[in-house]
Length: 374
Image (cartoon, rainbow, N blue to C red; front, side, top):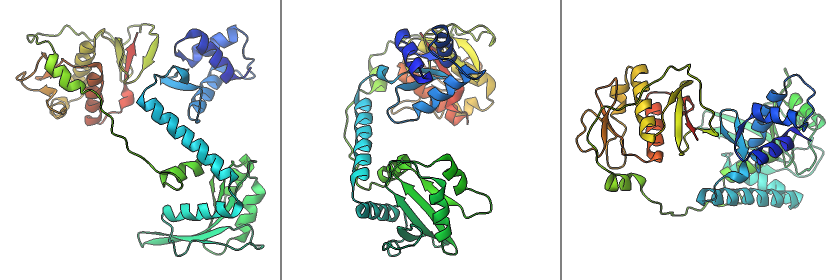
C-alpha cells in the first residue's frame, strides 16, 4: 500500500484530521506501510503536502502538519464554484489533447499574444527542418527591452526528454530565447538540460502550467460573475446583541510552556468552539470567542509597542471595533495592558477577521496565529 493510500485509510477510520506523525504511527502499527528509509514520518508529511497541491487531491491541509480528507469539506457555494472550475480545467485539457496539431499551434499563438507578445511578430512557422520551432514572436517590455522567442509545442501524452531540449537549443538564432510547451510534462533529464550551466536557458511549460496560462489569460474560457446574497453577520450582531456593562475581563495569559490540550482539530482562521489559541508559537487557553479576542489583544498589546496606535484603525462596515472610549459599543471590554476598549459582541467570523486585520496592520503574518478548537 502506498503512503497516500495508507493515509486515506487511517483518516477515513479516524473520522477527523490528524497530524502526519500520528498518521504514520498508526500506519506502521497496522502494517500498512513498509518504509525503506529511517524517517517515514517525514516521508508521509512530504507526500501528503505535495498531494494537496494537486488538482483533485483526496487530502486537505487542516493546520500545521495536520491533514484531513477533501470529502469532509462542507458543501456550499464555494465548493460548487471549485467543482465547476475543476471540471472546466478537465474539459479544457481534453480539448487541447484532442485538437488537430495545426490548431494547437494556433492556440499557442493566441496565448502568446494574450500574454503580451507583439501580435504583428507572432507567427506560426511553416513545416521544415528547423529544429522543431513551431511559433516565433517578440515580447516587448514597456519599450525598454525585447525578447525574441522560438517556441516548440509538443501535444504529447508522454514526457518530453532532454534530446528535445538539446534539439531546440541547437536551432536557436543569436539572441533568441527557446521555449518548449507541452501538454504532458518533462523528464528530470530534460529539466536539468534546460538550465545547464554555460548553455542558453530553455523555458519549459508543462501541461498543468499551460492550462493555468489559458485560464489566466482567458484563452478558450470566459469568466462569469454571479451575485450572491448572504447575511451580514456584523449588522445582525449589532442589532440583536445583548448589552452588558463594562467589566474587567477575566482572561489570563498562562505560562506559554503549559501543556497544550489535545484538540480534535487544529485549524487556522476557521470558526468552531475554541479551546485556546497559539500566537507566535505560544499557547493560551480561552474557551469562548470573547476570550480569544481579548486574549489576543492583550498578548499583542504586551508584545507590540505600536499596538495602541494601530488597533484603532481596525474598522468594520459600520462601526469601530477598538477605540479609546466604550461609547457606542454594545458589549465593550477594556483591553488589559492598553488604554483601549474593544467591542466583544462579535460573531466567530468577526473575531477571526479582527485578529487577521490586527496582525496585518502590525506587520505580522496570519500564520503567527492559530485557533485551537474542540
